[in-house]
Picture 1 (cartoon, rainbow, N blue to C red):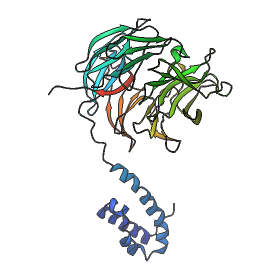
Picture 2: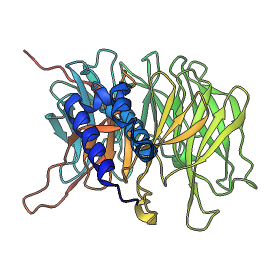
Picture 3: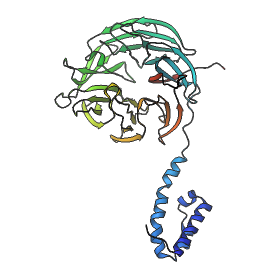
Picture 4: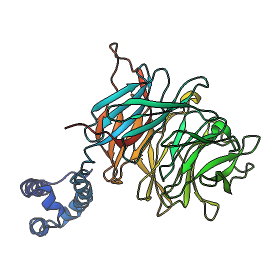
Length: 409
């Protein structure tokens, strides 16, 4: 670095003093004429100061970003339902604004992995059980309490609700069980969906239809089927994967865009030795792959309600030992490009609020629930899972769902 002369040092002190007086924001606003009159006699010093000025000016975006107002609060009754595993397995409810625990219900030893709600959010639905004794439960949200349960036949732990609120679809075993939501009567159990317990389901936001993963008898993933809940049958298929090109793929998550046009799929496989992980974008109208990007092992997905972003987590490799690369991603739907979102390792389940800005994420390391502002990419809240009396982590968050919890005044 060049040593400044006495004259240059004097001018530098003056410039720094002026910045201190008028404030850095004024300096960033482009009011530099006063500085020009000070440094004009020192031509050599101007050439030295230009990089300094440019550096300071390029820092203005960071200052402005820090001034971005935080997202407005969500509705007072907005609540996070945590599917907990461990010594206190069950449903835990947090206020979505304060991240304070407001209710819980123990379901030990089983875990209620997925949660759905009635249209008024007064009733919840979930599945739990062990060793083939899984049941579909319903109960009240405020307070948490079980009301009813029915035995599952071909399904296990997965649960989704149709957009018209008429059906509950249980899956993740030998097939699917379809129930009437209000009566919880079984309408259909079907083992024809390809893939059995490996089947993923992505429900439409507008029609009583869902996509599911299709596998050949040798378990090679070849594409997706479209199941119509009114006709109670498969009505179409989207076969986009040639196993010769995409062998041994295991699906990690599957979601559908709000406009029902694109499927987003995360997979892992062994074709690169140590485990290779991909995020696929599939146009279900054109029936073709329009994007493939590397992602973390067992990546979980969440689409923003406006359909412009897909957030992609990066958990560790669970029993397989894959390491998180300490990075969470955001796929830009409009530009079909991938971007780094957070430098946080071990991110897992994600839910995006209706404001398209407030994001809740579960983490593998330590088990905290973090609240993130999508605009600034900053953590704006945290719920640390409580430790036991010996300081040990004895509970783990398996899933997270945004709902409502009504408190009495």
